Structures are given as structure tokens and as C-alpha cells.
Image (cartoon, rainbow, N blue to C red; front, side, top):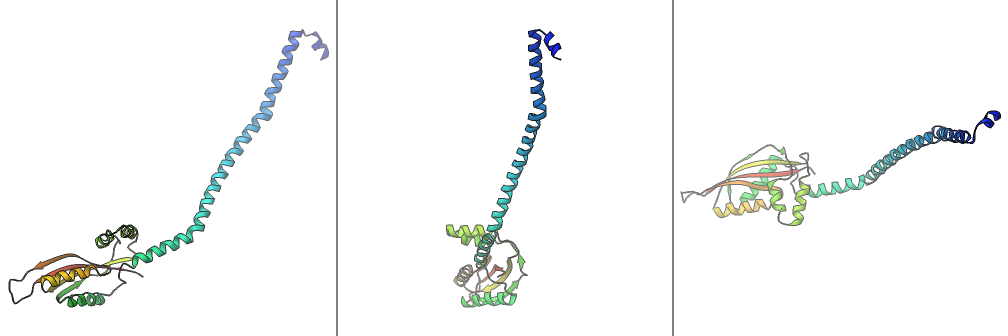
Length: 211
């Protein structure tokens, strides 16, 4: 081998030296550097995946730790909202409640029809009108809309009464002030017979909530 090298010219020796160096560099790249780079890329991908998983776990842990507080807040809000409504009333109690109001205002009930209770959304027109009186009540109205039909029920009552216009107006005003009750439609008929009282028909909604 030494004899072969000794026979080479200086130029050939330099070329041979550069060739050996080139082979060493190329061999080192494929045998050492390239696998190391591939491993580093793989480890970096795994690291990013672990970071994402850790962030997700941290979020889940935070939600779990806050779940009890959020549940308590929702329960308190729910209790505050359902207090605006009547408890679940039987038709007999609704009849007694409204009849006593009519009689206290001097009206004479003629007939009353009470529908079955049906689940409804809590954002009724009466609650929206009442809650528009102030910013706080408007905020409560927005929260009220979140109540599901599992809590709030509506009973529609059609009533015929007789009495003076003043008595009828006072009665409607009194009913509108009652919790969870609204007069959403009424029809007034003035009597042409002076011996007879005026008459009116009222359509009333009674809102009830499970306590």
C-alpha cells in the first residue's frame, strides 16, 4: 500500500486525501448526523404532543375544580328565578285565587275555564315587560330565558265577569301586580241596559315553577 502511495504524484495524493475526507464526511452524515436529526425531529413531535395533552389536562382539571362552584352559582340563579313564579297550583287553587281577587275588587264572576298546565319557556311576555323596568330586571330576564321547560308551566284561564269599567280596570291592574300572573287579553262590553252591569272577558296566564 505504501509503495502504491509512494508512486503517486503530489497532485494525486492531494486528490486521494480530499476523497478520503469526503467519504468520511458523507459516511459520518449518514451514520451519525442524519439518524440524530431524525431522532430529534421525532422527539420534538412527541414533545409538542405532550405539551398539547398537558394543556388539555390542565383545562380539564381546572373545569373539574370549578365545577362545584359553577353548579352552586347555577342553582342559586335558578332558585332566584323560579321565585318569580307561583308554586305548582291545582285548578281548584287557581280558581280560588282569581275568584277572591275578582270579589275583592267588586266584580261578579260569571264563568271560568282553566286549561291544563303545559311546560313553557320562561321568557314570557309578562316577565319581559316587568323586567324591562330596570337594568337589573333586564339582566334577570336574560337569565330567565335560560330556564328550560322542565321548570316552568303555564295555565291559561278564560274568565267572564260583570261590573263597572273602573272595577274591571282596577282588577286588571291588581292581577298584573300578582306574582307570575298576567292578563294578556281582555274584551270589555258596555251594557246598554242601565239596570245591568258592564261585562268583560279576560284571558289570563298563570305561570308556575317547580320548587
